[in-house]
Length: 414
Ligand SMILES: *Cc1c(COP(=O)(O)O)cnc(C)c1O
Image (cartoon, rainbow, N blue to C red):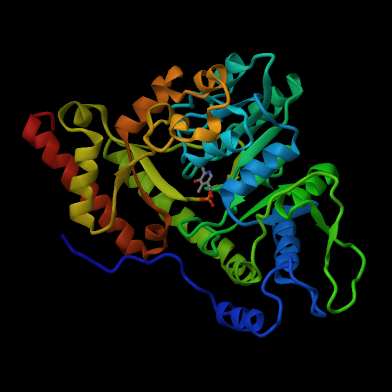
């Protein structure tokens, strides 16, 4: 075993400190304070990220969870509506649906990409379904050809949860631009981050306007110039909102990080391709992506362990062994959302509106065999590891080789 210093995350770029100092002395720390004579970082980031994603609008927000809830509500989702949610994701993919008083309907995933299975999604549609959400999970892009066709066929908005997939592209277009809206998280572990943050992107002027209202207490950014000392947010009140604004400090850091995103994405993809080749030769099955994918973004590198190894050892056991060998955490995927300790609507009194609603939002009523199988067969690690030099990636492959060989030798299957 050769231990090395693996890359840390996050990594500040060259502009971060200057941008932060600039905000500090600007007299305006958030867009919900008075205009001070120059463009807010928040609006500068919104323009830059919309440009990066190729959409007409971007509405920044305080967190990814808020962005997803805002996107859903702006697409017309409300109380008691059903929303399809892939069964393997971070809890927020489902809790954001609960956050708008709707019902997350957990749907099974594709065994190759770990993303929403279009056939399972179609089977889950009922007259009460109001939206379909998809997560481009770990390093995959979901089958957007099938999912956009499904959404169109049933006249439902598709909302893309892009918390793992900043920079990923499908048929040469950014993820998040295929659905009615795309929601991003800029939380500290994500590929584009400012600690806590988020954004909604869309081409739909109505969705963008509603999203603005929802994230800033029913106000919208005045498109006309305002005088110094006046509020740039206009009290439209067209729809009531909440305060989920992204602060100027956060937007200033995001502008710095956006400069770095493409270079980091390419470097991770190169290292991941090398690792895919090495692990495939060892009998593992690296996570796949939909055929239309033109650029992968690796939030987590994930691979399915060989079946004969899994008859002898659990994925958790292998992951712990790999962690000890490598000196960075290798873990299983998320726990399926029908059996995840973080998704427990009954623990919140706010959801106890009536017995019928409580039983509809019970995650345990869903059956997710593919999610369970992926959880029990796949190990994964975080994206910053893929920023290491090529020879370090070779060390990861040799660690997998040692660990798998030791299991095979112990069980006489090698
Ligand atoms: C992180 C994440 C979110 C929520 O983002 P926050 O910024 O943490 O609120 C939503 N969906 C997925 C898939 C995530 O990984």
